[in-house]
Image 1 (cartoon, one colour):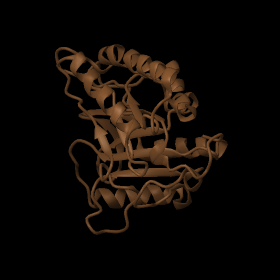
Image 2 (cartoon, one colour):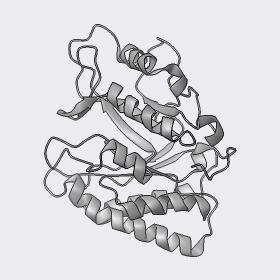
Image 3 (tube, rainbow, N blue to C red):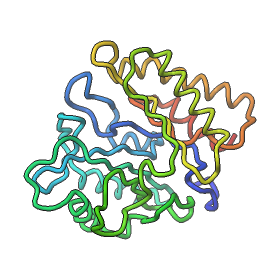
Length: 261
């Protein structure tokens, strides 16, 4: 991001992302990633999908019923460490309440606010819409996938809000899944500059596909799509945010390069 001009809205950038970013445990149907958060950042991932269970006023990371052996504070702490070393970057972070709340004395919003305060408010850019890259450098932009319930100001743009999102995660046929991914990547390239386009390449099926086996089907097609796209270079804007399970370095790199085509 350091080579991109400050005036660009985040909504027009090609941004690599990971689905269920911290899902490393729970068996084949729950595990979505193999790279640590540090390795994701170092590879170029700038969109995170963070799922917090509200458990005894704390925010452990879960994927469904599966505890992922870390918590929201640690994710934000590691993110701040990255931004300290790379102040020209920004992180888009979808924050979602996951699974069932358990024995809480406060709201999910209040628990998020406590962690944000512990980390330091100055690390977060609170805005009702996606800012420009210049405004967001060195900060976390939370995409808020939970209610404020009138308890205070939003942490960031509402998710999904005005965003265009393709997230067909229940997959019975990888060809049908790919057709939807391809459709939305094409929509993004012809979309409105002020609107963010998020395409989830991820999915699963309890019998036919694990996240990893589907990624082996879909991710190479996304890479081929981007390689072909760059051969022509005729579009109004980038492919937007591309969100993956088990991404490879070549695919992440090609998404980043879409900002210069």
